[in-house]
Image (cartoon, one colour):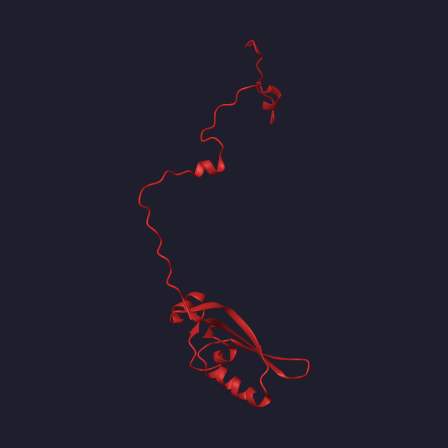
Length: 147
């Protein structure tokens, strides 16, 4: 079973049993009712000994799975690591509409990578015939056509 995390503004609110639950950020954004999901946040809580059992019971009743880990600090106090989808207090803005292209534009991709659009044949020095014989014996012609 994979982990699922509650959606809340604080770690204490994430411990409540009525928090919405999501496994991925996409699920969290869909379940956030228009609120902005800022991040997957982990907060460390050190509840008082009296409140520890209540906090663990709330976490057990939550529909989320694996979002609370128990640790112990140097003094022997129980520390809870609560991971949750942190919600901002502001509503999410509607996404901007992507403008539709009105007319077909020329593709200038080659201009980004190449100085010239076409490659012309190389002019200049002739190729050294010894460079052609790289992997075995070959017949090299002289300039007059005889071998």
